[in-house]
Length: 536
Image (tube, rainbow, N blue to C red; front, side, top):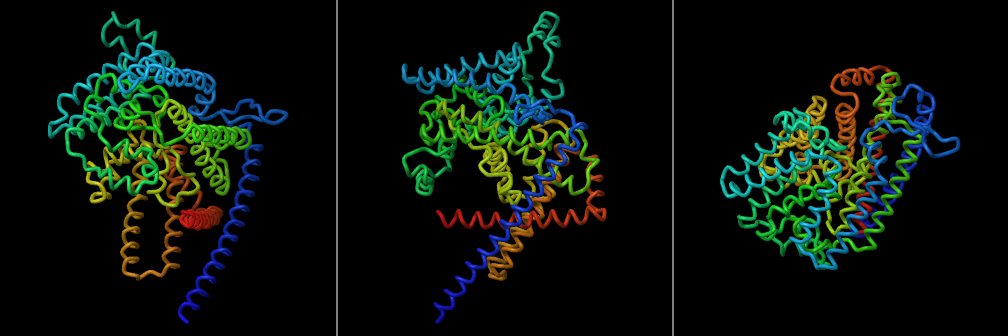
């Protein structure tokens, strides 16, 4: 009797889930049709007031293309030469590795030579600043690695140069005297102190990995292999390459410099730990087959085509950089804000995946920076694990765990996000973004711990618990939009204006529509997650 009741309940629940899924999909289709239609109207009606639009190449006659984002414009313009240079570099590296059976030491010399050619073009004489700071860091690590206060010295040294590089705009050779002043005429094509932010992360990684190499490892390799499906298949996943200490001889000056300036990952990352880099110099990655690497590249080409279509049809970023969004209605502000976040996600997706693809061809696996779509994250924790994910892994390994991990989570997030903000740039709007994110993070962490406690006691029914999670996801997505708009579009000064717009009569209706949309999106994410779990 109980079995038949359970079966009928299960069938009713499945039917209910199917009906709910169908309604959610219909709503999402309607939402995107509305957003696309309205975005096309906005781009057509306001294009004459927008800055950063250039003649494109799609359609006949050609439409204007949104090239208002400096990062995307520079990357897109230099894409042919970057592809040619990295194609030659990786081809030479693979040929020399096979012909001369080069391992860690040999490959470090070879990649250092290629990377120096690359850096000489980018930075000219300014590579002297890079190698002077890098050499000083290497000496500090080698001398003080076993000292109790080593980590304090490492952070002070690197944070000090991070700030000084920005404050003095990469320095001038004239400060060393008239004899060196002529070198200021050979500063290259790209500001070295912008790229050096990533070098700082690598210098800290080298310092910690060398420091931990003199201690007993806490990483249980056998336990990891039992749980990891990649390692079970006889391959090496990124985590085992990172956690397994390199041989003490691998912490040499040439391997260290090769790691800091490794050409495919130098400009934008993804960020890779020293241990994993050194081990893959010795034995190239075997996680991805040649077929999988080619498929990865083809998917990137599809993403590039999608971006070209998007920037020719919708001028989201041009609205943001031109401050034209101030003339729009609350509904249009919501659509533009949502479009800007999707543009930013696709931009970084393409930039990071291009350099990661080049690194994979060279035999070095770096973590994926965008493992999930921005529209498939309903809480801050999963969002930050999926947005610049290699930076997140770096933060967890070198900041979060050393600061005390989950035992001091509420305190750690303030330190971490403040560092993330100043690491990007010394701007108040970035600090505002960081502290707003922390403010939104605190209630999420408290709610998560509370609901987990209730769930453990059986006090919450499955349905109620799911609805509470959906409501929480709705609020989180709204907060994420606000934080990112303040940090990257309107700045702190525009925050009060944005709030006033959504508190108006029309704005409140739009705000309700926005919450409903994010609620529907969150519920759809639950269905996607359930489908993935059932397939495993």
